[in-house]
Image: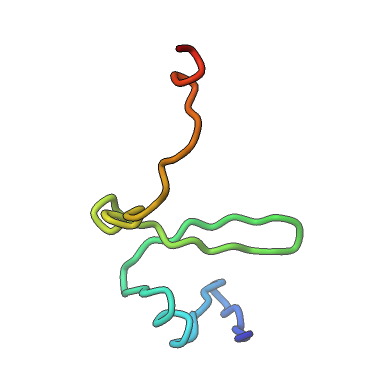
Length: 69
């Protein structure tokens, strides 16, 4: 686990290892959420970035329309 320090203007620098692992880049936007004493930073991805991310997923499941027949 990496440690960071909050600066006077409440900025945090993400360690290089985290930026590399997540493929973050300068100017990328992050969603910020909190739960209890935790803070979550979630990279916002464009639809183009997500293209193909579900390739190979199984679609073998019962659907509502299958039950109506």
